[in-house]
Image 1 (cartoon, rainbow, N blue to C red):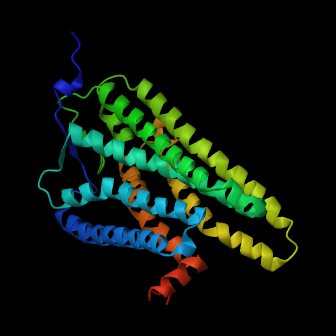
Image 2 (image 1 turned 30 degrees about the vertical axis):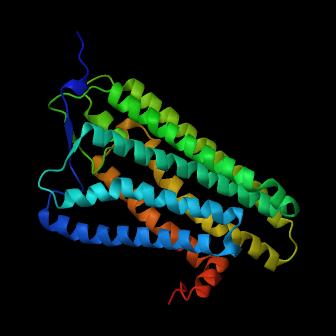
Length: 313
């Protein structure tokens, strides 16, 4: 009889970012500060948008949800990483590992779809300004948000299910060469056939990435054509400025995710992947509210109303 691995393995050992105790202390302080600022910045942006009626437009409703996702996405990985920096044994139970995977894959996928929805919002705002509020109305916004979360967590459920119900883990394959339960790292330590998991991962992430990226590229292609038709340079600059923050966030997020997941398994490098993973799970959620705040005049003006200055010094 073929017994599944779950009857043997009850926990995994996370390798973490480093084995040096001195470096762990330094990284704990560094990432604790970054994570605290991430939560503070995104919470402040959520509060600002919620409190100022002038910011209650579709674009800022999407931005508020992006901040919610960034807090949850970063928390799903960073809190565990901080705990492991001060723990003697960096172990995580199988249920804990599956919950972490579901969380980060779910919120990560949701962010992909939300960024695509935000690009569609910018397309309608620039290409169809007279009918913008008729097209991007409250009902449309709610539908796009619900679809983003459904798409993201469907991704998380499929990845988690295939990882914990199809992969085989033996007693000598409990060490995950990562600082969180990443699907690629689990595939690497599996002692069974992983071809189906690799195919599912590549297909699923490929579909999410490429479909949402396709919407973004088409939206910006239409935006560029529309902007080039504007005769005044001031008008073109204003139109592009409304998209600059979103384009920066998209480039950072999609660039790292594509490099991480859409590549041959032969190119897998645990240490390299740890650095990339830190960037898109810790650094990007920290940078997103800064990018939108420092480059957005309406957010700056709203902050001034509450006595907050976010102008760079």
